[in-house]
Length: 321
Image (cartoon, rainbow, N blue to C red):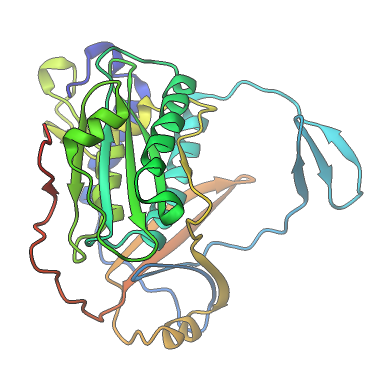
């Protein structure tokens, strides 16, 4: 997919320049001190640790655009304000981080899981229609022999044309093989094309899917400056997501990542981790006119899982287009 010139807006250019500047920086960051109180997210084989400061919750959101001030107990009406593109960009990035953890907590690849992409033969720009069609699609899926034995996580993907794709991760909760021929999947969808894949257990399912949802193919001939002339710009698709749109939904059986607060060394010890972080990032931002720096570390558990015979990485099932 190529990005039209008129979609190269200031946020795209700002993101591309930021990416270029970050690549120049030294990637070796100081580790979070072992005795520091941190927040951790545990999902799948990943332990994510951050030294972000703790903020006390002062409001609780209520239905009908209201909230309660936990300090005074007063119920107040939310003030509606226009959200800037910059605000939306930050919100989308936070949503993607939550989505990555959710995928990691539930999908590891293997015979009991499938990744399906649903597309439309005709342009559809209304997400309400997409989710309505998906609801009917799931009813057909459950009418097969799976019933309630199948869980899902569905994610919207915007196109530069303004239309939508839908990526769906399926898994059988009983661990048995999940197989649906792609031709049958298309008949169940009934609105266009489908692509059905199976991922290996050794694949990082979350990272693989997040690349589809955030990266974008562009070219210099379409207005991209020489800051980055790669065909794929990581994260550029984030600028296509509209505000106030529910980007994903999931079935009741999908598990949330485990969130804990403890000293870093206690968290690592509890998870039998004795190696340095596999990845480490620093992020700078402004809060109440104060510049803060947050370090985030990712640790992968070293226990190896046997590869299942007969399943190739990212294999498309018969009938995939």
